[in-house]
Image 1 (tube, rainbow, N blue to C red):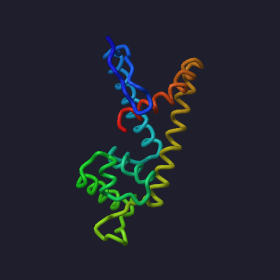
Image 2: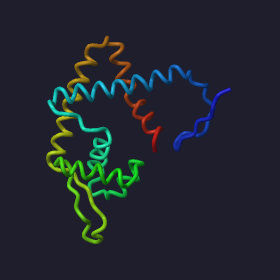
Image 3: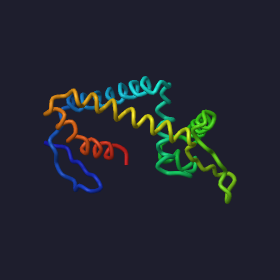
Image 4: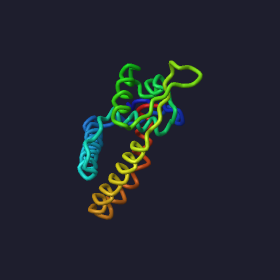
Length: 162
C-alpha cells in the first residue's frame, strides 16, 4: 500500500512507496554534485570557499535586505547566538554590514557589502560556466533530461523545508 503525501498545493493522495535505495542515491548524487561544484568554483575563482552556514546567511540577506539577526535565525532554523557568530565573522571579513535599527538600538539590521555582492556574482558566473561545460559533455538525450529535471528538483527542494 502507498504512503500519503500532503503539500500546500496538492491534496493528499496515495503514492507508491519509493525505493529507499533510489531515494538514497538521489540524495547522495545531489549532495556530491553540490560539493564538487562548490570546490570547482572556489578553485576557478582562486579563493577559499566560505562555510556553508555563512553562504546561507549571505543568500538570505541578499534576498531580504535589512533583515534582523533574530529574523535571520528564525528563517535559517538556527539559534540566534549561532547567527550572531556568523554575522560577526562576515562583518570581520568585509562581507556584511550590521547596523542598529534607528527605532530600536537592540535590533541589528543586516545588508551585504559591495564585496559580498561582487563575490556572489562571481560565484554564480563561475558556477554557470562550469555547469555549462559539464552539461555540454553529456549526450543530447542526457542533456535534455537533466535540463528538464531542473524545475522538478527546484520543487523538490521547496517541499523539503517550507
